[in-house]
Image (cartoon, rainbow, N blue to C red; front, side):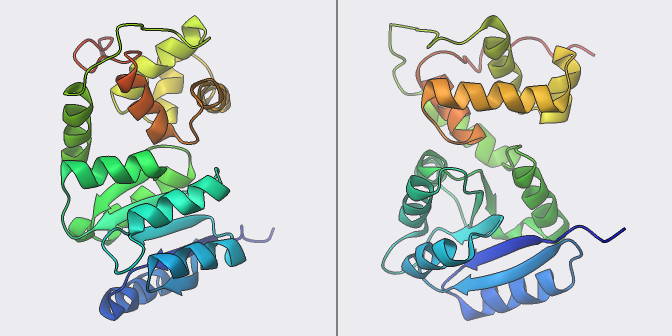
Length: 226
């Protein structure tokens, strides 16, 4: 039986030393293959269209077109793009802007190799890699915004609304499947339908949108229990 094809990775960072470190990292990783390197946001957009990688590591602070703008440009053209934003330091505004632009997750550069690999796999599996600090900042930022008085369900079924509650806890697809007593495949189908109904393209945007319109209240989530 032949080995599965490695995940194809595009990196975008304006620092040559960082790109070199990524090159060395992915050269030593089984299951991943670095297919392209971009030094600017504009190059990242162009190279994505050429290579259509499985996942992108996008630095947010680059000259010219920022990483946030590049994420928006890629996701606007390729809604299924899987992009993990990375930066040296984060702020609420920056992390929220990256996630709203379509990033699948957000990490700081000092997360370390094992955490980086785990985050990429989480994103590729349809989960949402966010450091605990970024998740707290994201929820704090969203809950500080006014929630519309009209809390419409947007056509969501009771099971899809239940899904949002578990998403608010930051659970993975596997963990949600256990809570809902369904398969992981069914959870992915639920997410696909929720994305369509909320007119978003990623799991992270589902969280952002659901908090904004009052479908998720992070202060009143269902109890996790045992």
